[in-house]
Image (cartoon, rainbow, N blue to C red; front, side, top):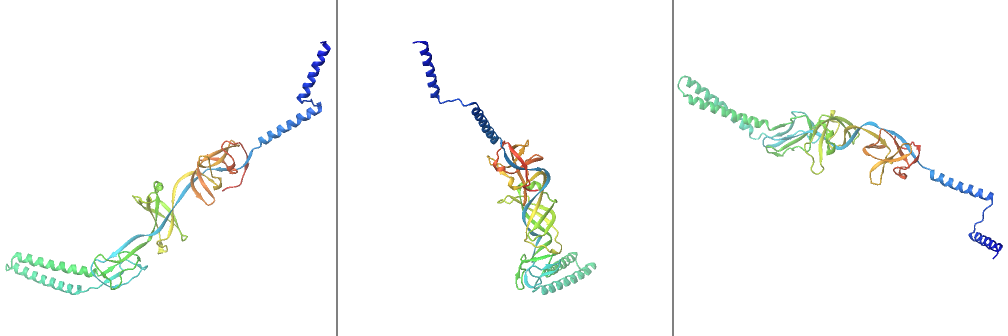
Length: 366
């Protein structure tokens, strides 16, 4: 084969292969346009990827806060006295009724004297007779007409008569059951016609000034309460009172594991009543805390309660928190640095370590 035929065959095969590949080189102007379009697409995608999620933040600062823990309680009389009969008898008269105020010495129940008057007259006569016998014996003994033993015997008889008279006088005195204190009579006293034995109840008196606010204190708060410390309470009727802790139980209620604590308050004029629901406020040690809007609280993947903050101006971080107290307009928490950038908008749509765009927000507690 001549060389001319050989080269013709090679060029023919090359042309066939080129057409078979489907590639046709664009004109110079078309190539530049394609490159520009590809560059724009890449830049658009890069811009889309570079666009950050926008969150609203608010700067919060820690403050020293004295926490107050409310404990539900009830008002009670500071003292209850059960006035009981010391002798037997039928109630002839009762001067007061439920709710009446009484003073020390006021007659509560008058028992019948019965045969006591006659017994007293007999005892008085026996004492007088014993004294005459003793006087006569002493005169005779001075003249040696009576033995000293007779003097001693008559003296003993006189002392016995005196003791019997004193007992009857005391029993007569006990028929008048008087109030031992100033107080308010609670419950129905013994009524006229009732028979009282020694030890039977005549009346129950409550001391209303001072008054007690009694509450059951959770055991975890026990280290923060001491006798003599100042505390306050708010009654359901609207009154706010102040006083001192006067009693803390030494043992807990076995069912609730709480300790009875008593706040003593002044009740001049006895305007405050028993049995009123109250909240006793216990001041806890001061703590450094932040106030957050409740909506800023969230849970992480492990179920821990906390909030998301922004650190280094752009990165999201989850901060576990401990709630100190709650108010109507926010929550006081521990666990943040002195100053923090709290995410208050969009916190539920970002994750730990995410880079975000930050904007100031006015949402949340002041």
